[in-house]
Figure 1 (cartoon, rainbow, N blue to C red):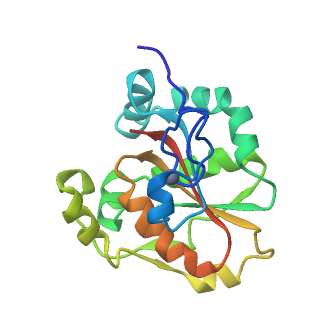
Figure 2 (cartoon, rainbow, N blue to C red; figure 1 turned 45 degrees about the vertical axis):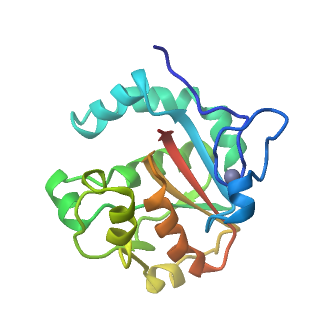
Length: 202
Ligand SMILES: [Zn+2]
């Protein structure tokens, strides 16, 4: 299996793959129940060599293949991001971040911001408490587990020299999207157009 990009023919609002005739949506699900963000973009599908590259980075500490993927996706990144955008990485629970000694979404946001020519900030969107890993929970448990998981650091926001035109929440992998939605619900409090951007989507 080779590297697979996320199809360009998708619902602009939630990112779900659509036939060319229906893209860019909104899809039926977004019409019935719009998500708390305006755009959902993913660069790659989470499988094959992309999944390998992410595991090498997150578990092995070797991000070389991720940089290669981001360079390959450079054109797409520059299409999605504008110079007045601000990227906010979605933080992990603090306990897990300490254990791993890394904030992967923040690294990713920095790398994307460099390629997209925009800003990023790791302080504005905060994670509270120490929820269990999402991957160990069922769909309904995931949503309940995330309630109250995020908040905004208004001091960090007020300290920004220039307020952005749009906000993008950044995460490495999007699976059910439950984390993205909950983080977006909180980030919507900033009152700006809001998108979510993942390196890979399952
Ligand atoms: Zn949709």
